[in-house]
Length: 439
Image (tube, rainbow, N blue to C red; front, side, top):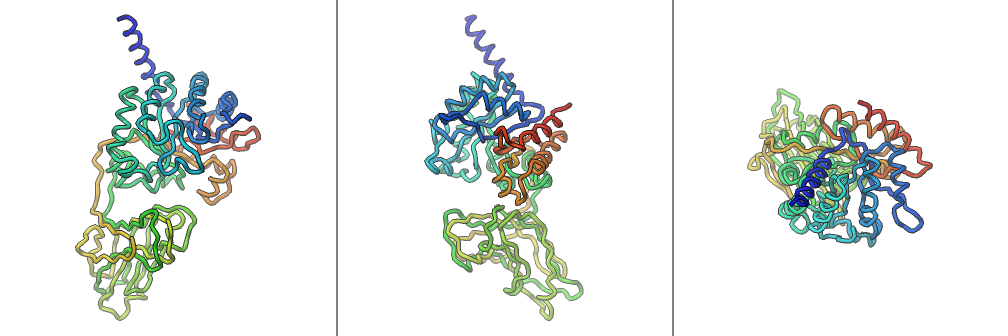
């Protein structure tokens, strides 16, 4: 009996330790240093993380079949160095790519949940686990709500304090996330913020206090070819009021932040003529204000069309466009995009159009946020279209860390910072982390 009591006491003690995250998460992800044998150089990794001033490291299990074994050797050394660790897995859409798998359990995420939880009891500095690119895999074949619940219950039956944070992107944080995924997870890691304002915009969806005006979603599915001229639009006939300049305002946002342009184009048309357009390429989250005077002169009525047009056919280019908060002046029409019966839907090809009413959060949860700014030179340039200098990398990271004091986020984990001896970025990050580590 005494042995049982002691064992339980130890387990409670370990889990109590595991419940505590640093006051500010100062971390790094991936870009592990390896020896000539291909195994992770654990002493060197510990040294470089200490040189960086990191208190957190997210360990990717993907590059080598020995990564899981190396993690188990890394954990006790990280614990001695007061470094907390998160196990990081690849999802269905990434495993097998280039012959790489999250070994040894691959796509058996119930087994991963069980084994990571067991390891977290043995090493309480293993505080959580992350699955990459999670949103793209939230479906009935990969991570359905039932599967996510089962993963969580499997892990928490062993260690109730083990955290599961999916990796997401800021463009994916919205009402669908809040309704479908947020109640099932313990927090989120969100990558590659473009500005402090983008972080701010995500927070209401993380604490379920959001307000979404009536809007329109235009969706083009993945792995689906299209043809030029395909479209997803809604139309309505509007009366022209002669005593005021006709103006249309609306908010637009899309799920694409890559550079691939010339395919999906958001448009506002008046009697078939383009009055406003915006390619989905790049980061789009803005407010349009369009003067329709050139299109309405001499007309008592005009037909407005709003949506997405296919300028050039694609083979694989999924996108979701959100159009909301439509306001009009000098026109007589029902501007409520959530009122489906006021609009006519026009689709060609595989586009889908959905009207959404005003939506309000219900204060059901409050999810912690770890921000992941880009740290590797190539990824930084790709994500932000500016030079990846130590000054720019630290400036991006600073934006997230400044919000920790406001209680809005819990820290930053940098994506793949160069941890080699010659890295100019690591000492710059160390200086930043030291600044924020001070009470």
